[in-house]
Length: 106
Image (tube, rainbow, N blue to C red; front, top):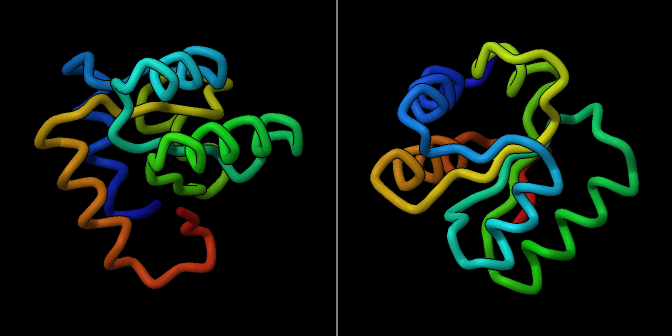
């Protein structure tokens, strides 16, 4: 588990996260997403769709270890999450950017 897991769970309980690839894409397009998190087990098509949307809108994009989004939010089968703008999102960005990992993508 990464250091961001606790904040991810807190953000879920606080209603600061939109779960699901299609809903995350809507938040990206609507300018509501501060960052996007994707499960490493997501399909190539889902990864491309979210990466392209994030690149076009300049939204930071991070890949987390498989199953971490589901575990942190307490909901099975969740592969994507858009974190809404705010202090929790800023703290997650800090934690993810300091983490030296090949999984980070912008």
